[in-house]
Length: 98
Image (cartoon, rainbow, N blue to C red; front, side, top):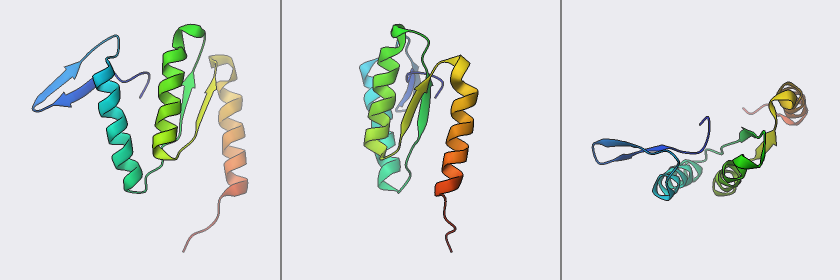
């Protein structure tokens, strides 16, 4: 997602709601749980420029908690460094399977 969840499917309808609704967040987290049950762990990050986005931080943390993944935060100025650090750190920890 590029932000808090603002859409979900209800029957045959696509429901678009902004600002985000609690029902959309619940449905999104239910889908995250289904992914986790299938062994899919979600890792995500949020670009946080000010305190306006605390709701997004809470949602990203909840996604990581439900999926067994990880989350990270930064502002736009630190995004490049964060991506490089994550890539380099991940390369040190990766292992060959098979």
